Length: 413
Ligand SMILES: [Zn+2]
Image 1 (cartoon, rainbow, N blue to C red):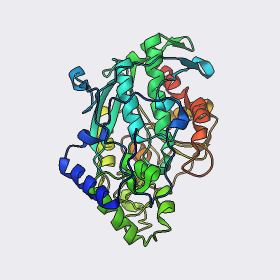
Image 2 (image 1 turned 90 degrees about the horizontal axis):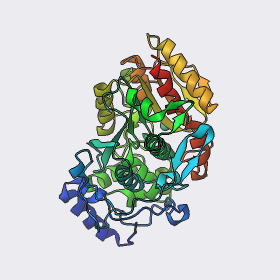
Image 3 (image 1 turned 30 degrees about the horizontal axis):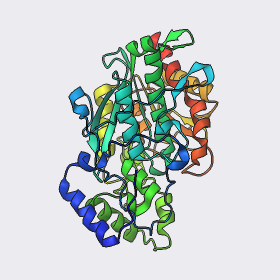
């Protein structure tokens, strides 16, 4: 990954050229770069929004093996030749995590790292299914991974990175993907059950980063924007919210919404109209949008969910070690209670049974209330979001058993 420091006018010209290019995959996927797994080599998030830095995604591919040839890839995957050496880290209960991905390390986990990890995973684990479910307003692909038999009787849907400043949740979801793929490949048994066999009866759909535009903004400020439309959106949000030049870095650091200023977890069709519009215009948090599923990211995730109709969903957020699962009464209550108990036993996080009908519009609210799917929102990490990157290993230790245990649970249903 390389950064170029160039003048603002050049950035604008560069952004315009990206905008004119019109094909997200042409510039969001930098390839031919073998992931460097040492954490400190990866630069931390810039908190200085006044530094004008070009997006880091312009490296021309040096190796371009089109993954499209494999038939399942997202656009533009060209893989390096290094397959990496897999060193397994045995966690609690024998859950494995390969060490050769960015997500396995303590880093500020970026969209580009995720793209490179996905490319490398596809090379190492041909059983993995990879595609895209949409494109964000700032031109990034929304990646979707299936681990296990896509025609399995049971399905689980997991997503992370919906709130921008909670990006550590994307890294956790990527670890879950890598872990399951590695255990499937190695023939690992967990509590006496073969992970590979469990993945025949339950497949898992992952959307590891629902809001990559917002995440790039939190991590890199204005330099994290790659299209003219994205830049215009952010500039108008800064104006509407009367953010001073001195206040910009803090405003970006606290950003939860997508790049159009909508809180995606207030944008789903669960009592959406009841949810108070606590702010009347696009901002870095709170604003619920003009209608349910008004945003490309929420629409894409809702479409995927309707098409998969999973048995369980897991939404990862930060922070507080809390699990939410309830939204109204319904047939989901018994299984929902069982599911949240399982997650509580594995993580030790507190269960919050409260819900308020007008505290609405969340993804989990929608899957529970409208689709009747037992679902949890898991708040990982401690402190203030973005929670420190150093928490990722503890977060992983607390969450690594959830998917294997849920697969075992579903196996007997
Ligand atoms: Zn959140």
